[in-house]
Length: 288
Image 1 (cartoon, one colour):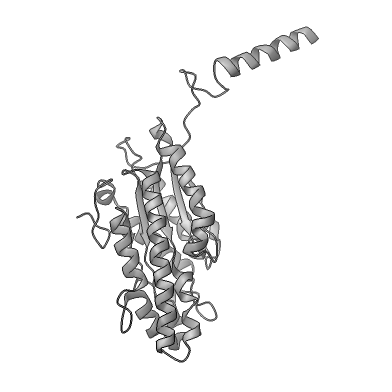
Image 2: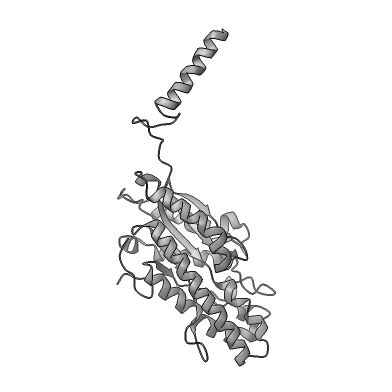
């Protein structure tokens, strides 16, 4: 019996080293992994504000839609039930922390999957929201109004965001290749429904530009996304008080808001947009 067990163990080792590991395909190569939806971002992408972030956050809600409606690359069939999700988003993330923490992981995933010989394991979609913490952390310090000092702080935050976001989107596009769809989200104004409501007009200027600010956060998201052939899910003006947590929370959507955001991403990723993989996109994220 002991000799028989030893013989079986030896055969198993030989099969693994010479014929490929258990679960290998007929050509001796490992079976391809499933296609992936890769998400990056801040607390909004991680599901903060939702009653169950793993279920009612916008990323898992969107993922469910993609599994039902996205045509996996080269399949030509509706639905991508094999699509898996990896959500790298972290609460409190800024563009600076995303570069050091999330981006290396995302780039490694994209390079490993999208540059091998197995299209069935590609990253099909990358979604990202980032930048809210870069600029909205500055707004509460502007309690005295849009003073020159306030504008200087905001402008400095926007300059940092612009450089960082350009790096993020550039590295994602390079690692992904031309065919993977990347979608970035613009931000809504969360302040009218919270304790910082008096600063809501200033937040509008921070988002969309205004006196003293030639370009706002959302302008930069749109232009940098277009330069990197990425689509834009435009959340600006799409969430009201009924879709926001409000009160002392001056950033996050509730379940209804997460559903709105998921719908915006899904609409942006509708079949006409998906058919434009690898083509240049215009400032609003639509193919040009």
